[in-house]
Structures are given as C-alpha cells and as structure tokens.
Image 1: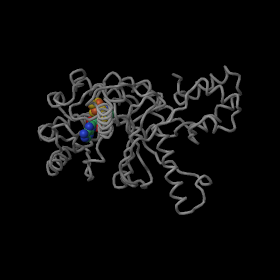
Image 2: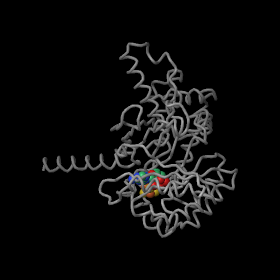
Image 3: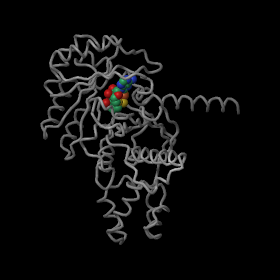
Length: 384
Ligand code: SAH
Ligand code: SF4
C-alpha cells in the first residue's frame, strides 16, 4: 500500500522534492492543490509538470472519503458516515455554532472527527466501543474528514446556486465551513497519538487547514501518560476530559480505563498539562440516570473542577440501542447543574432537543454496519 500524500508535512515534502531534483516552489503549488483547492486527482494539478505528477502517482496515494450516508438537515447538526478505502465506516458530525453559547455567527461550524475505527476502551455507555477496536485511522483519514466536509459544502453551495441560476460558484470565493474541530468522534484519540498529532499539525498549519490550535479540542477518556506527553508538545490544543464520575467508585462502574489510571493519576496528569503555559481543560460529564446523577457527586466534582480551574459540561446521556442506560429526567439534570453552580463551579447543561441526531458518534456506524451485515447474511442465505 502506498503512503497517502496527505500524511506528509511540508518539511517532509520539501525533503522528497529535493531528492527528486524538483525546484522548491513546486511544494507550495502541490500544497495549494491539496489543502486550498482540495483536489481529488493528480490530473487536476494542471500547473505541475506531467513528469512530477507521474512520480507522485507512483509513490503516493491520493485517497478521499466516500460519503455513505448523511443524517440531519442543513442548519442543524449533520452526521456524515464515511466509507474508507478498506470498506470500514467512520463518522464525522458537523455542528452549527450555537450563538447563545459562543456569540458567533451561525455560519461558524464545529466538526467532530473520528480517530479510530471502533474503540478498545469499552466505556459501558458508548456505541463506539460496542464492537471493539478495528484499527487506527491514518493521518490522511483524519485530515480528509475536514477536507471532505469542505468539498461537500462547496458542492452543496454550487448546486444551490445552479438551482437559482446564479453565476457559477467557481468564480466566487467560498468561505470555509469548518472553523473549529473537536476530536470527539469514534475512538480514543490519545491511543492513536502519533497519527493524531501529525494530522492536527497539518490541519493547523497555515499551508494546510489553517485552523488555530486553540480552536481544536482533543477529548480523552483519561490516558494519563499521553496527557503528559501532549503537555510537552509546542501546539496548545484544548483538552476535554471525559470524566463522567467524580469518584473512583462511580467512574469505575462505567469506564474500565479508570482501573488503569484512577482519578488521582488522571488529575495529576491534568495538573501537569496545565502547568505548561496555563492550558485550559474542560470536564465532560454525561448524566446517566441512577449511575452518576446523584447529588453525592457534586462535592467531589466541584473540588476537582476547582483544583483544575476547569469548566464542567453536563451532557444528558443519548440513548444507545441495545444498552440499558437512560438519560435522567430534565429536572434531575437541572438540579445537578444548580447544585454545581452553588459550589461556584462554572458549568453548562446541554439542553437541545432531538437527541437522536445529536447523539455522540458511533451510532450511525453501528446501525449501518448491522444493516450491511444483515444484507450480507440475507444474500448468502439467498444464494446458498
Ligand atoms: N474517546 C474519547 C473521545 C470520543 S467520545 C473520549 O472518550 O473522550 C466523545 C465523548 O462522547 C466522550 O465524552 C464520551 O464519553 C461521550 N459519549 C459517548 N457515548 C455517549 C452517549 N451515548 N451520550 C452522550 N455522550 C456520549
Ligand atoms: Fe472509547 Fe471514548 Fe467511547 Fe470510551 S467514550 S468507548 S474511550 S470512544
């Protein structure tokens, strides 16, 4: 299998072009095709000499993601199910900014991206881990989630303009749709550390995605050693910790990782992360009925949040098919929030309706894989 061109940094491309005896100015030309024009074929790169395109084709692949399914209407949260080159499925979720939350214009979007096919960490409530871990995503597969959404957006705008018989969008500049990235899709990002970091460097670079590090949030279930490693990186990404329990007893019930890295170790790693240039941490806390929504969690949660100077995001659980967990009643969530605020903790509670589409990543893939398996079984049964 060839290495994909979108897993190389600018420096790596420069070194390669130098080896090939290509002039240095060809590198920015190639980068412009890859990340500004988001080309999907070597042939499209018309200002690169044919001989260079032939060498590139011989040494690198230029993979894109195939859109297998899409859920959700324009102006709402939209889920994209991508089929990868080996037939595996991953999800990305495009979320319009909530002006009430961030005070930004609604053409701003956050893209939630995946980093693995499946997940090995097996949190009891999560759809992504239900069928185990299949593989890590390559650098280009992480980067392509952003590029594919931008291509899709461009095509959508172009067809809308064509329907209105407006002039072609190719003569207008199209604003990028992805302004923020949250690495909260399928998989544990810090378990695919090297590919994640390489991809985020490309998405952050001015010659690549151009998305500021402070607009990129990495969510982790709590891999303490990798949090420390991330602290030593020069790029200042935001970090979200999937806490979901403020005591070891509660956390252990739902997150097996807590046995390997109990709260004490996790919190120490978070403090180390913050000791470097005052980096910000958010604590994510899904509220699951009867599991972690008791007021006994308030005091330890408040203590933790204050120690880490962290904001707490409360998220009512999204029901996953086949799993017994439920979201608490609205008044239980509101009471939890109020109790936390009373302890002088900055907290938000996600209140939007239509939980099925806003559900965390992993569910559309699960549904599709089960449908695919079912169809395969039926066709085997029919042919046999
Ligand atoms: N593996 C990383 C990132 C992916 S999960 C992590 O665990 O942080 C992203 C977030 O979605 C995590 O906070 C996770 O706990 C949460 N999540 C998973 N399943 C959910 C569900 N059914 N409802 C609400 N949040 C869920
Ligand atoms: Fe994996 Fe995160 Fe889901 Fe846990 S919550 S199983 S770490 S994706």
